[in-house]
Image 1 (cartoon, rainbow, N blue to C red):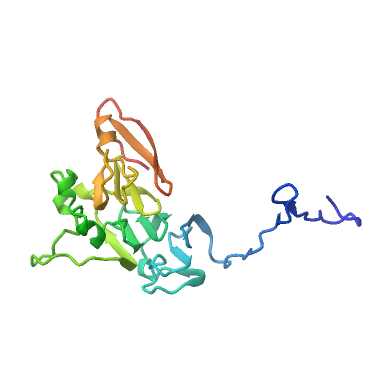
Image 2: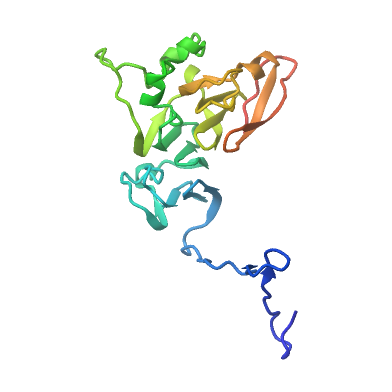
Length: 263
C-alpha cells in the first residue's frame, strides 16, 4: 500500500506463520549490487558457497571455503565474489555447485573440478572408495573399450599407486572416456552428472541411493556412462541433480541412429 503522503508503496512485513512472531521481510536483508563491470549470466548455489558465471565466461566464487570448493588454492572463506584466476582466459559455458564441490564446463567441452572429493565426486582417487574395494570402476563393469584414454588412471606412469585426494583446492582438468566433450553439468550433495555433446550421460561420486543411475548402489571415483539411455536409444538433453537423486530430460534419437550434437 502507499503511504499517507501518496509516495512510494510501503513495504509490509509478512508473517512467516499465522500467529507466529517471526516475519519475512519483502526486501532482501543482505542485498549487495555487483560491481558495474560484472554482468552475471548464471548463478549456482552449493551447501556453503556460490558460483557466478559472467557474460565473458569468467567464473567467480565466494562463501565458505573449508573444503576447497571456491577454487582459489586455499581453504579460506571469501565474503565477496572473487575471480577464479586459474581459469582466467578460458571462457566457461556452464557452472555447477554441489554440496562442497564445484564443476564447470568450458566452451570447448572441457571439464574442470575442485573442492571436496570424499566420495569421488571430483572423479579423483579417494581413500574411502579404495578401502571399500570400489575405486576401480572396471570391477563394477564401468570400463569399456575406449575408456583407457582418460587423463587420470589408477596408477601413475611409473606404476606407483595414484595419490588419494580428499580436497582439491584449485581447478583440475578432467577428461571423459571416449574423448567425449561436455555441454551440461549438475552436482548433487556428493555426486556429479555431465551431459556430452552427443547426448550421453556420465555420472560419478556417491551412489548409495542409486543416484548415479547404473542400476546399483556403487560409488565411483571416475566417470561412467549411464548405459540405460544408450540401450533405450535415448539422447540426453539436460540433467539436474538433487542432493541424493538425479533427473534427466531425454528424447528419442533420430532414425539414422547417429546422435546429433547438442548446441
